[in-house]
Image (tube, rainbow, N blue to C red; front, side):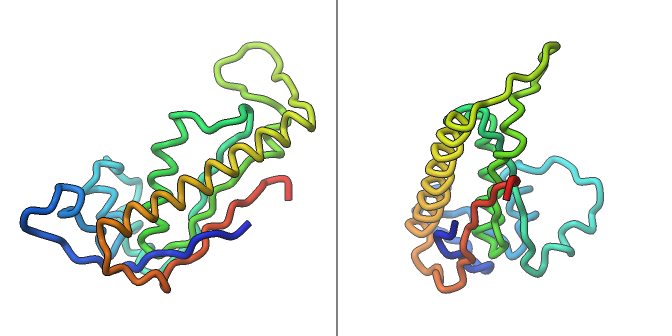
Length: 163
């Protein structure tokens, strides 16, 4: 599924009477942006910033064990949105194959398998939310940085691990 186009890598810092959100800039390197916004506390290898000088594909997986995303998905998806805004290929992944076996979080019993109709409903609901999240997140960035060149956007592609 394709929608949206990516934003340019280079942004300028705004000054003056603009809001804090408007004064913050996205850096040429997404790692610097994520550090400034306290998304990253530490990394296992300082080489990560240099590896992200050129666009790469980045994915974030969510399991469709419910018909909606939950708050726990938000931080990871916000990070993926920042990669998208920095010109990388954002790939939200809906784990419909893993979703068939249920949610293992802290349970001592067997996972409950989802039926095909429940799984299909959950996947459809989450896909709709992911589309809306990336569309609105991009619109929000455009409103605060009107000089963005939308021709540089890469399409956000929602993937499924059962495909």
